[in-house]
Length: 204
Image (cartoon, rainbow, N blue to C red):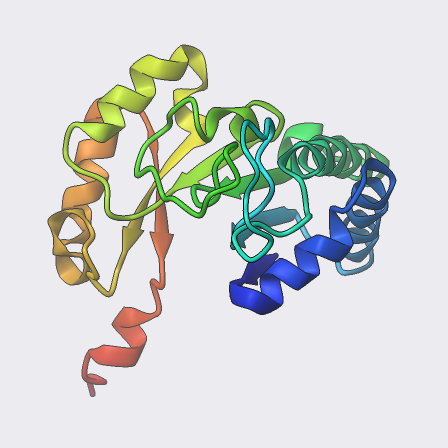
């Protein structure tokens, strides 16, 4: 589930304008997941939102009217609905997964953190995990693991297999990011693993 740029701001304006609308958005995504037998959703909002607490007057063109509080409510409801769906399927509720992408913060800003911080943790707290932006540094996985303790495996450190600013350079060196995560006790999230098919020569 992706929103970005001006079109994304308009979409968030509609989907998260108030608590009731946020709830309906979560219910609709749950219905889609049930109909198509999806295991969960990656929620990636890459546009500005109104922050949780507005301490000054922001220009209308800086923040959309989709509010961070409503996005957090949406995440919480969607997470619970997906677990209910798994139970009805006869599965464990742990087989559903709602993952938040490290993008917009509780201040409403599009500001990738590259690790878990107080600016993105409230989203993590209400869903199953977080995919950290792939430009993290070597010490960030252990920092994240220490931050959350027993939920360390719910932190997916992003690795761009194309190598765009990612730790270790991606491509055939993507294992280096995995090694750092294993030592730290976090998980690894591979972004664009199709690089191997799209870029390497086809062998006979």
